[in-house]
Image (cartoon, rainbow, N blue to C red):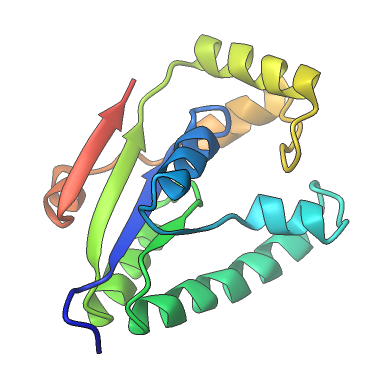
Length: 161
């Protein structure tokens, strides 16, 4: 086991909030190894709207992230963590591996999300899933905001607006 505890950098926010942009910057700055299900799916040539494949791949990449933490590697896990139960499991799994948790919470309004998603679609960014307004609205209904208990359970929180 390394002499320092590994760090797990996590994100909370819907599509278009800025998770990928920040995750890429953090990786370039040496914060950790970035794991992005969307990027892997795109690189494998699998349609980004294939939700079944996405979920299967995400489970495998999550297990890989946990193994990296066990080996002392800092990880940037680029998932949205929309639901409390996902966050609870992720926090518990990270702590079981001795990891510190840095959490980036994105609080971006619907109109700004729509603007960013339209810009991203126009740029045809690699790994970017097209999200029409109706789908964004469905997603926004699913996203559970962090609770004060969750915010207190991590080592560092940064809120992005």
